[in-house]
Length: 137
Image (tube, rainbow, N blue to C red; front, side, top):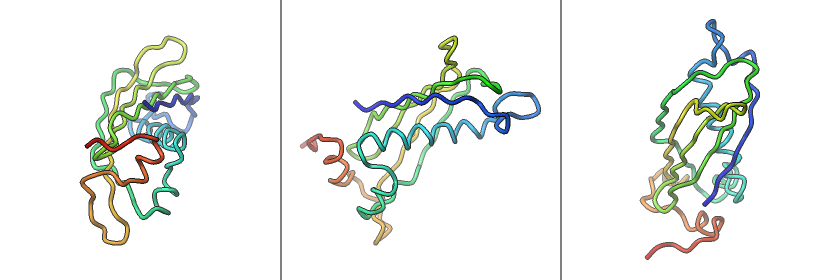
C-alpha cells in the first residue's frame, strides 16, 4: 500500500576499519526510510505525539546479505505491510548499480497512549484516517 524509496550515498564516517558499513548504521538507514514513509501519509513522529501517542519499536530484525561500502549508492525501500494492530514495515537495501540485495529487515512498532503509558491493542483511529482506510470489522 505505502512504499518509499530512499537513495543514500554511504558516507566515510559510516564505514569501519574493514571499509564496510558498520552493522549498526543499517538501523539508521532504516529509520531514515521509515520517517520518509510516515511523512507520505502525514503521520511522522511529531504528528503521532501531537495526537497523544508514541510508537516504540518492539521488534527489529535484520538479515545482512552483503556489505555496503564507502561511496556506494544504496537504495532503502520501506513498505508498510501492517497497520491495524501495529506498524510493521518491511525493508530491502540494495546496491543502486547492481540491484543486488544487501540487507533485508522488518520493524514492528506498537501504539502507546502518552498520558497513561498504556499499550494499545489496536492502532488509533487517527492512523486509519491518515491512511484513508476503514478499520476492519
